[in-house]
Image (cartoon, rainbow, N blue to C red; front, side):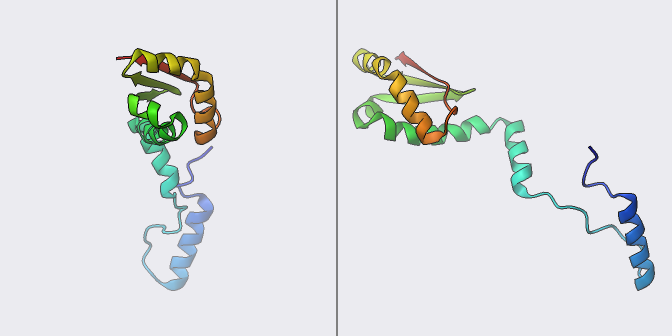
Length: 126
C-alpha cells in the first residue's frame, strides 16, 4: 500500500493544469490528504509507552468503585502492564479477602473498563 501523503501522477498533472490555467507559478500541492490528530496520537503514545500509564488512571478510578471503601483505603493498585493489574495491600486480612474475591473483582473491573482490559489481578502484601 502506498503512502497517502505522496502525490500521485494524476494529482501532479491536475495541479500543473490548474497553475497553467490560472497563470500562477507552480507551487507545492496543497490538497494532500490530511491526517487527523487522533490517528497520529495513538501511534505516538504507543511508541512512547504511554498507553499503559493512561490506562492506569482509568484502572485506579474503576478500582475505587469496584473494591468498595474499606478495600480501596487499604489497597493501592501500583502497576498495570500487559493487562495485569498489581495491587498492594496493607494487611494480611485484606490480602486474604482480596484473594477470596479476586474472580468477582476481575469481572467487575472488566465490566467497568471493557471486556479483556484486565486479564489478571496480582495481589501482594507489603
